[in-house]
Image (cartoon, rainbow, N blue to C red; front, side):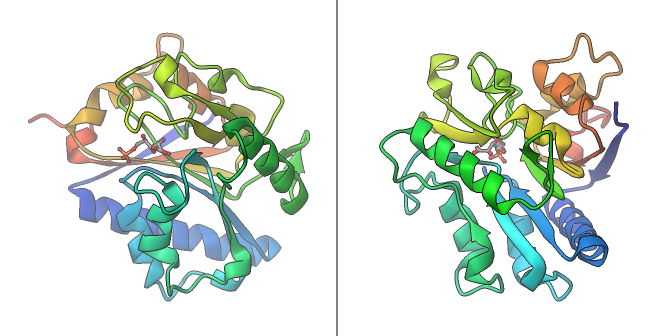
Length: 251
Ligand code: 6PG
């Protein structure tokens, strides 16, 4: 069971700087060790500012860095809710990443299940390092929803329970009709997150404080499913939180 390392930053900008610096260091070390850095990017809004900082980084080894997505909304890549579009605007468009190093989750297939099957096969083809048939990322970057989802492993759906495939899909509205955006998702699975060499969790704002208090509480038995997921990771799990999201911050 990994120890959680929890970095508390005073505000969103400080969190972004700390996370970007940690990614740069990890990328340099990974490339020094095995000449590549494979990262599964998080969606949502929190990582946007991290990606914008990395766009101007002079330390990232972009020629040896390959970008994958940890999850995607099942919408066109130019849709406002697309995680690809968010990363494209923050980092990729006219940016430093060689196009051949960018591997988005496609959403042009007839169904989300087809997209998941396609990406599952692509990961198994592209990812050099594998463990028990699952791709091994150097870094999986995650956010946390107030409901305790991470990537698109939404509680109450089948996605968190998928233990044989590397990529699956779900419709989060079946468990929470109020989920936003109310669209189907494609996501890497629990076994892939467990096997990552490094997991970074980014969370900011008051709305994340209750779920983080549960995740970081000492008793994993009582914790929400996502906490047990993270506590079963094989390697290091590092949290980057701002004061607002930190349950130990008295306000
Ligand atoms: C997504 C994400 C999801 C996200 C959390 C936190 O596609 O929405 O991958 O897991 O990380 O919902 O989102 P925010 O960063 O917007 O709070």
